[in-house]
Length: 173
Picture 1 (cartoon, rainbow, N blue to C red):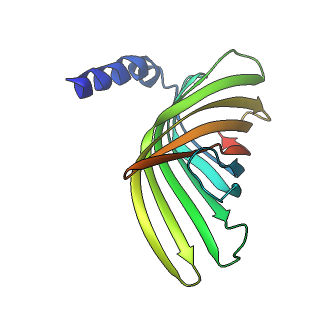
Picture 2: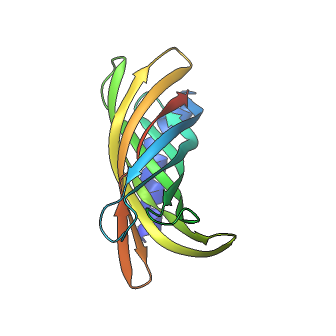
């Protein structure tokens, strides 16, 4: 029943934009830094890339697949690192009609953790969610600059951990 309600909501929100021809493909790519929060142990922070692909509906609403890849190096051992790859089906809502628009973003997703020591690695997959916000800054008719911060919580087997990717990138409209 919840899936039917969610699908009905998405159709109700997007149908007027589709009928008016205001649905557009969008893609973004950026650089991210991520301090670790609870449950990360010795790993204090990392860096990587983030991005998204999806569709915007009008100037405010977007359905996106947010993607990020963050590597957390071990502070004491150079050949030990923790990689986080996340795929989040997301909803983004931008407020206002000016050249600088604040937005909220969030959604559930899949986390892949890659623990590497030297040339060997182990991979774990877990459910995760993200919630955040940022700014879209109009650079031209075709490109926005985005600045965002998102809280990411990963619910691994028997424990959870979180981190806060902060990113800057370009969003192609």
